Image 1 (tube, rainbow, N blue to C red):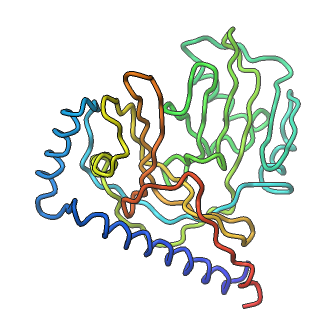
Image 2 (tube, rainbow, N blue to C red; image 1 turned 135 degrees about the horizontal axis):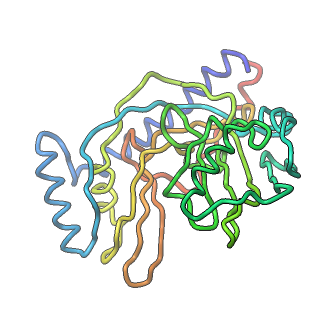
Length: 280
């Protein structure tokens, strides 16, 4: 990819960002957070409790993050190259996803599943690129241990960079599926993010959190903002991912808030056609 095309991709991405920010500011006219931010948010939290919305302690600390570009490793990519070192398993690669079945299930116990998988990740003959992933408690359950790829110290909440280990009823690890985000690069200098409390109150004020529900967790992660047609690259931003459970029905939903500009993220990211830039 030449430098000129990279420049144009970044310009398009940030134009979209500016549009998002503009929309955010328009919506925010009836929910302004300035010098009275603390008092306003405290009022909103009381309103949430009155609506039977429960939550744990919410941090008001701002963090930092980047715009990051990368692409899912596909045929001939880094993941396939590293997979050639794997042993004691049958595996196949399809559309950038490696699916593995161990020759013999790996015995473990209910209390040391995570420790056993952590050791697996250090063995290049069992798992490729394992040092790029960390255990993700929020996405895991009794049948699947999810490890997310780390980007600049934060988890990637995207199918583009995950390992999902399968656990059977005998607490044996039978295999896994893996994706990997390669050619990762920072697009712009570090910027401040909104706080966890800000993200939650924003969702409430815009009617995204139903009454009589519980906020199970909220994590600052990286999520896909948009796709480009150049080398199948995508742009990722810091995102507050929030899981909510309705108390009556038990329904669970996950919402995502762009941590740079407070907008609610789309389930399907926008795509930017950059093919016309190839000859620039």
